[in-house]
Amino acid sequence: MAGFPASGHDGAVGQVIYATSASLDGYVADRQGTLDWLDGLDHDPAGPGGFAEIDARAGAMVMGRATHDWVAGALERTGDPWPHRQPCWVRTRRPLDRPIPGADLRVADGSAAAAVTELRRIAGDADVWCVGGGRTASWLLDAGLLDEMWVTVAPVVLGGGVPLLAGPASLELREVARNGAFAVVRYRVLDATP
Ligand SMILES: NC(=O)c1ccc[n+]([C@@H]2O[C@H](COP(=O)([O-])OP(=O)(O)OC[C@H]3O[C@@H](n4cnc5c(N)ncnc54)[C@H](OP(=O)(O)O)[C@@H]3O)[C@@H](O)[C@H]2O)c1
Image (cartoon, rainbow, N blue to C red; front, side, top):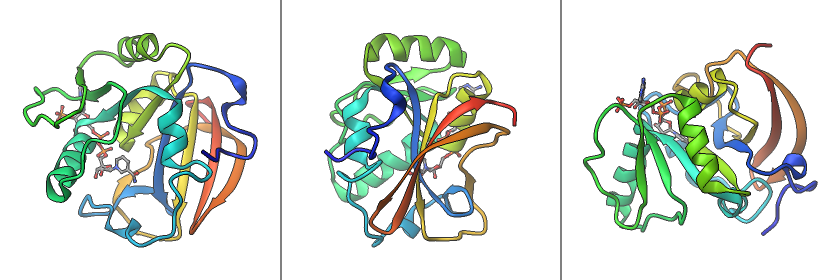
């Protein structure tokens, strides 16, 4: 597993990390809610900031219902298995009515503080991976509970879609790496206000 050059998150443990891909203009999905614009772009999952690194570090995951539904649909279409070993909390106001074989899914319907307390308890010394989307990352950011952002920036300008983050936020650049066609950037979240 090849991590960031400086191996990420400054040695701290139990970090809440929003790790996602995004277009250059800051969208995580296009106007139709798809990720088709990522298809065919060169990317090494075991490379800097790749899926293998965050997956190995994470002891628990959190995603929004819209992201969950997109993932469930994609797995149904492809027949691929759920690829995660960690429990995954889904932020939603509705019951999870579409079980994903092999997935340990739990509902997060309370405050961000309550969710992160539980996520950190389960993760222990490992990190917590916020998969997204932008609304769920913003929920954590607004509560002051987002520690890092790892953004895999695609060489694509979408012109609109689902925002990476609502903000405002003030960030500190910690690392920059190349992964195939993508620029991968690691930021420390300093404050939810710039
Ligand atoms: N590029 C990438 O790597 C990447 C990564 C992740 C996601 N995505 C894309 O991002 C898109 C979704 O992002 P998003 O920002 O629109 O949504 P999201 O963060 O995935 O989900 C937001 C969810 O929050 C729930 N919610 C809202 N208020 C709530 C409350 N008070 N209590 C509990 N739950 C609440 C809603 O579910 P209910 O209506 O059920 O309450 C809503 O569906 C998808 O198209 C996905 O494919 C892309």
